Every structure is written in structure tokens, then in C-alpha cells.
Length: 294
Ligand SMILES: O=C(O)CCC(=O)C(=O)O
Image (cartoon, rainbow, N blue to C red; front, side, top):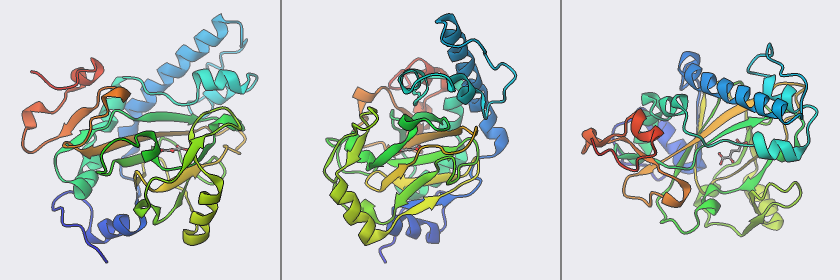
């Protein structure tokens, strides 16, 4: 088996080898519930602002102010259409302080360092996903992340997928087709069934990949992480639970010598042993400064 030679970081040799051979790795309880609290607070503020806007537009009567974070957004959308969900609730990429706290979490960076070394750039493509129960556009079809940046050079971008609540088969945890990270970018098209326009691998190629490699559901508890390579096929289904929103974030990291993908926004230098003084502060990130100038 091919072994990685990058020293440092927090992963064991066995974990690195699993990532290298399967294209993904599960790290149970990587982030504590206390460390998730700042992002939950930011998201609760966001849900409140959506409730206010829906109410001002006359689309809802009940603000569900007493509902917990785990269910409130679903209750707000329960009488609305997929169109509204697509507009307000599908995925968010905003600059809120709690997001930066999580993206800079040392335990996440330690794990990533094991795979790409200590010069770590946080890619501008990150998403918060409230997968609300029973909403068709909450499903994500089989795809490779690299289909979103096919022209970037071939260094791998690592996704770190972290649920903010427990994610399981019922509420639409990730499903992965292991070992597919060694494939080239497979032919894909924009998803048309629900109108999300997500990239989706052509059907016959998905069938062939699953026939060859199988697929695994990857249930994980809140704060656990699934790291995966940007060529590894993955998807998630509609949330079939009664009222549990599947809240998750997908963060991305890459070596600093890779295309910073400016067309997707400003990423930031998250860790550097060579230029520690250039690591972006929260203020840099909130202001979308592409580089720390202080
Ligand atoms: O969160 C999901 O259900 C899908 C995530 C995903 O496709 C990604 O992180 O690339």
C-alpha cells in the first residue's frame, strides 16, 4: 500500500493510509459540543433573521420563537414551497464570526496537516447546510467536488464535513463511494429533477462506480468529522426524519501553492509554519481580505 510521507499533524499512520486508500476518513468527536456553540449561535441569529423576513413578506404567521435550533428552521418552512427553501434555506456561505472559529479550529487543522503538510489555505468554498425534513431540494446527488472547480490544478482539496447535530441514515447523512478518489473527473451534468443545478455524475457512471466499489452510509455524531478527497464520489438523500434538521458544515482546505479560487470568494491562510505572521485573523476574514497585511 502507498504510504504518505507528510510528517506532523494528528493522524496516525493507519488513519493516513485509510484516507489514502479509501479517499475518506472518519474522525469521531473531532470537535467538542462547546466548540460547536459559536457556530450554532451564529446560525440561530441567521434563522431569526429568516423568520423575520418570511413574516414581513406575509409568508408565515408563526415565528416559532420557542422552537429549539434543532427544529426551528424546519417549522418555519413547513408550510412553504421548495422555491422558498431554495432561496432562503438550502446552503449558506456567509461571513459570521462562529464560522471562522470553526474553520480555524486547531484540531481540524492538525488533522489536515497530516494529509497536506503545515502550510494550509482555507478554500473559499464552504457551506452551512440545513437539510430540512422532507424537502426534495435538500438532497445532494452523486458528485465529485472537483466538478465544481474542474480547471483548478490537480492538488487535492480536502473537504472536512462536520455535522452540528447527529447525522444518520434517517436525516440524510453522507454516503460515499469508497476508493473513487483515484478516478479522473467523471462526466457530469447539472441536476434538473428538483432544479438545484447541483453537479451530478452521469447515471451510467454512478452505476458502474457503485458496482465496482459499493457505497457506504457514514452516520456520525455532532462534532465528528468526515474528511474526503475532492474526487471521491459522495451524495446525501432527502431528510426523512419527522422534524430533525440535519445541520452540517463542509469546510475545505488545500496546500498554499494551489489555485486560491478567487472566483468563489476570498479564502484565508489558516496555518503556516513559514509565515505565521500572515495567518488571517477573524477580522481579516470577516472583511474578506484576501491576505493578512498587518
Ligand atoms: O452535506 C451534504 O449533504 C452534501 C455535502 C457535499 O456534497 C459536500 O460537502 O461536497
